[in-house]
Amino acid sequence: MSEQLPGVTPARVASPFQEYAPLPEVASTDATHPMHKYATLYPEVVEAGSLQNALQRVVDCAGRGLTVELTSSPGWRYVAAKMEAGDRSANVLMASGERRLLVDCWAHGVHMASGSAQELSEVAGALRAWVQGARVRELVAQCAFLRTWQLAEAHERGEAVPARWQMMRESAARRHGADWRDLIEAAVEQPRLRVLSPGSSMFWLTFSRRAVPPICHDLPRTRPLGNGRFEVTFADGRVQEMDGAAVTVAVILEGLPDDAVPRPLGS
Image (cartoon, rainbow, N blue to C red; front, side):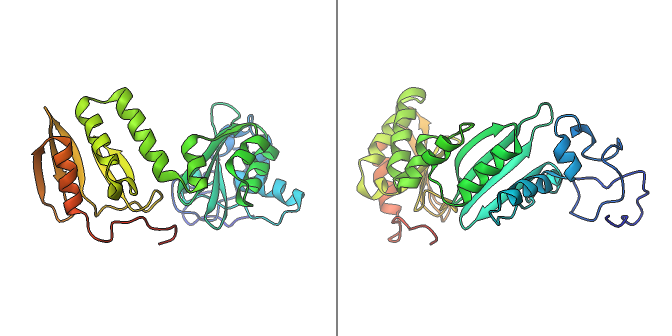
């Protein structure tokens, strides 16, 4: 059993929101134990001591030689786990109000699939398939509780940038005013901008050399001010205002550095 923490009596446990440390010898049936409230919904997890331990048992039984790890959040020490391999990872979190294991799959920092299941075996199978290289369509076909989306598949095909532009155009047509629509259409017509990954943040139109993290923050960005006027902010802090989307895009092009070209993964 774990050693008792300094200054903690056997009747209490350390807060799960503190750094990872050995646990005092308090049974999960004790109301002070962080897993106590999960005993009815997740008896096998509570018996194992944590979601990490419970999932590792299932994975080991399958004989795959994979490792289930803790997540980076100390607050989820008992109720969350992850599996990683290369640039792929999958996180699992236990819901507290009902028996539901929430799963999110990532690749190169991009959210690729998500869903929820009730059984540890289902979750373990999904994690194993994902980190061992399953494509997203294969994954969701194999694991019916997971779903994916258009942009995730585009990332997998290496077509994230054109997919993001198409989504920006569709969103502008449905939900934004004329100035934003004009800005998007003027930008997508320019080859130097069309090869960059577009983004929107608080009504700013941004550009990045990558469609995956880390996103670039050194390229010009712009936003509508209303009545056909736009603001462009440059990496050096300069700000310009101008009339018309076409003029705005021309100013952005003039301010692009020579290295504003797409970068491959890992660069």
